[in-house]
Image (cartoon, rainbow, N blue to C red):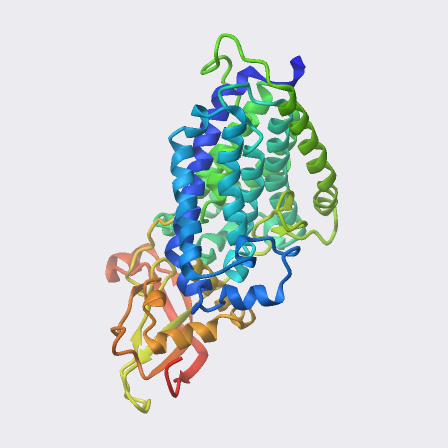
Length: 472
């Protein structure tokens, strides 16, 4: 079938595949380095306890069949190895079916992790990586030109990511409609980056222009993805530019990078990188791609209906394989930034004059003089959830108590997630407390005078002084 493939997307596919492999590598590396404290056998939300109450059909995963920390580590590091192989182009050295199987391995392994990751893996970019990773299995390798149907499905993903985010904003917080959300967002976002302070201090008219441009990019430009070239390429490039702006303004894990990766698949590079004569795809490959396309279009009904629902939901998976999902971001924007600050004391009985030492997290604000760092696309899961905890204690109901227990025990895996630990593991604190502070960016004058990028004010007690009578 002559219509089945499109030679002009050969180079776009190559860039897309290598970039996707790089995101896979970051995701698996984060899983390998953080899982023991979060979902390990002695973690805050242990996988063995979770799978006892969740059937396989609701959360298909290798860990439903067997779990141990050693096995999880094997899965995560195997994912890293597969990602490195794909990043090096190993799929192009294999026959078509072999390349497809190689792409299927990281998808299956990461699906196994996400489906038992619970709260720590409840972010929209997890589903986005899985949905796009599944499509990558069927995008082919050097034995055939990129199939048109898979390229269309990638555009459908990109459309839902951008259009869904645009609609959730217009239906949500009034500040998006009033063009004022960025008066606050750069200061109150989950994890500011090294340039966020400067973005916050841009003139308000620039903030209004940013919001207006965002609405155009998310509500108008996505429709142009389905128009002929070069309009579709221009639309994709505009999305890429917008996402790079977001990369500079904060730490949003790999959400922005995944959006860029998918947008690259839309770009028409012409004949660059394509062989003079494309091999014809085998019949079995055409049948498989057509069948998968039909399946995914059928599964798209609920996500498509959700886009136009007054009760639109965001970052939701409609099937346990995360094949077609709903996306969105920041339907509401906080006006005030609050942070939970955790402190410990060695005193056997806390007194008014007790010395309380502060635990410092790697990414979230703490010490007012510590400038935010760039971590994205790497995802600091505990830091992100601490931001949610400051919004409402309900977000921390399942894991904050176990976190405190592990700090009181001097648990080494938990302490590795932190930047500064004021007590050695073999001499943990006698008591832990948590306090809620309001944080705001300093002004230019305050920054020059004090060297602090933050100013904080005590709000209330989040957790009273707490101890455990004996180790876990």
